Length: 77
Image 1 (cartoon, helix red, strand yellow):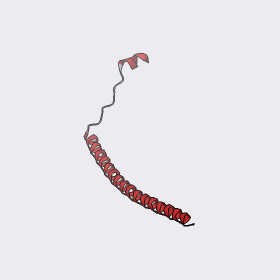
Image 2 (image 1 turned 180 degrees about the vertical axis):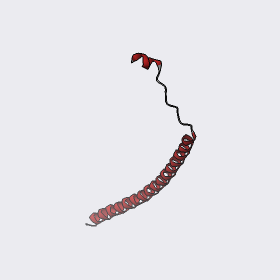
Image 3 (image 1 turned 60 degrees about the vertical axis):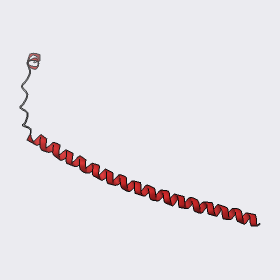
């Protein structure tokens, strides 16, 4: 009978150890998710800044002149 209690106690100890390991892993994964979210926010900010710079450069470019019909288009008609 005492060996059954010992087996049960061992299994409870293993379960407690497993639960603690899962809590530790969960905490590490939460830290990793937080880091990735911060990195993602920084990258999105950099994308927005690059978009604004490209938009500013494009707004300074002169407008393209309308294209004249080419001779091949006139010949086909």
